[in-house]
Image 1 (spheres, rainbow over the protein chains, first blue to last red):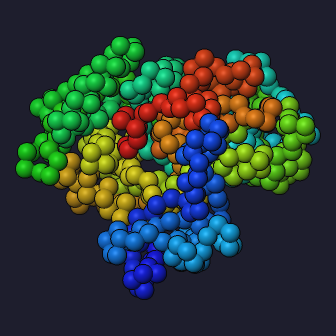
Image 2 (image 1 turned 180 degrees about the vertical axis):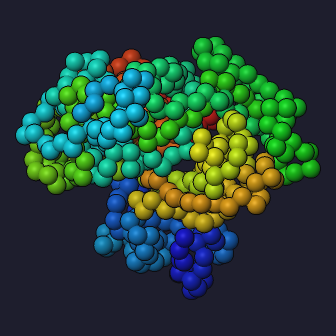
Image 3 (image 1 turned 135 degrees about the horizontal axis):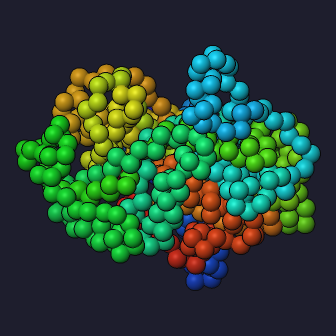
Length: 94
Length: 416
């Protein structure tokens, strides 16, 4: 159980208001027709499942209903950073 | 070390007040093994046991970062059943069920396997249609199963609430009489002791830090107790499968989540069977010790933390209380989480990999305990033959590339 700072509501709210929405920075392939079966499988099913600091998506289901990015430790559940899309992408995420 | 437990040894020890020998020796790693199994949970120990017993490979080490039976094997709710919908899944789980039925004798260790039956409740018309379909599929696959209505459930379990005046009234259930429970950590100890008797080294407090690969083939592992060479490596590390896979430069189609359970204080016998409900989401049985063993669901976020959210516990407790109002004043003793690696199709991966000599047995998600002997058995044959056991073929990791998924969410996705 943890609190999440919604970057849109600017409030620290109970995790129960939010829903996890999976690993961040998985971009839909620009040209799906050109993908091999392996690449398509990797996009749809394979995940990093990182142990440590993990960038993921959350949605403020019972609040503003907006999606945003959270960097959270999957070991301690500590939230290290919260961000909106656009501020951070796979290029500048650390 | 005492090789065999028997009535005679029990009587002799009882009368002479003798100290029991250690069940397994505390092994240190040798420099080289034919096969290394990473992960000393039930599945890993079962793999080592069947490698030694059925495949004639005894130069085997099981390396475990903690102590055996201290991970998910000792954290689950011990339910064993084989009433899965799909042919591939039900064959695998039924294979396991048949091994369970002779396991205590086979291992010379009482795993307290108790075939007290499992009810999977249905609360809506659609639930009941799905249950009838699954029961029919089970019967066609040689798995025992019957559909029972709410009156029969009430006769068998008088304390269950079959009133119509609840949010999700019980309409009926599927019942598997051969299903039941077993003593979970006893299963790990039994397999460990039996494997150890056949020459397998069980190395505890030994964490794998890296996997050595040379020209596309495994060479050995680096551990906290030094380097160990091996011709073949089987990874059976449940929630940490992705971490091990990363050491070999691989990705897996699994994500790790916390799965929670809790037990009550010990009580007199009140529930003689196992009751599960996917719709309201809770499952409960009473252990031989007398405590109620209650299982909840997974948290949606990724975690390696062995603890989950309170809302999951609350949701589960609400479901159990709707089914059994009599439990409302039962005090809970302990609550914990285990880390489960969940596959997108709720079915495991038992598979070779792109790295020669490296095999994975993972993705059992929320329901691996019931499969312990069967999983170890087919995985041992898969490693020994360097070819998938026939029951493991549908569980190749390539199914996520070919699209031949085994959609067991109907029977397995929620409750286990």
